[in-house]
Image (cartoon, rainbow, N blue to C red):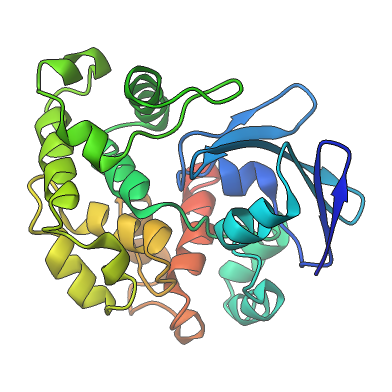
Length: 273
């Protein structure tokens, strides 16, 4: 990988590939917005940037090389060999078509609390409404960035009341958000510490939280705790398993189930099975 400072940002080359449109808008994260010039603007760990494809790489605006290495290298999973992973996925007769169609969908390694809170909000919800609730959460309780707001910390949310959260229009999810924020801020759930645990151990801890079932836990584990072997199951994935893999998931995805899940999810959501 080659990184260099450019006017008002950083250029990154030779890291492999990334399909920005799918990676940033396929239900992993909910705060990226697409601009007229085909760039995407988001706030990651309090830092706002816009990212777009350039010849041979990507350009990230308004950040330094240090911020790239400290935050965005890990966030975009640039240290993982996706070429090798996609070669494995192509050995499956169904996934090969998805890989060839969608290119490289990377896992976004998000801040653990943001991932947990976002997927609590996602329960029994659709993506436009999830985005709206999270936008109101950040606008009302985050800190101002250049054109947006940071994701409020668990500590900030734990100071609020259910009446304060009414502005989110999150319905039954508001008590779950508040309860999780208090558990995290008190240290009852050590999200960073879970990164060194197994998926089963992470599930057990996260599902102690009110309103966190297996699907929300597994999404948090995959997108917030950097466990690529986590395999969240929603209605799209259930349908894929029933129709394409009634005898079990293919051996080629072992250890990278979460990455394969993104291809399955997008395949089912866009073309069905």
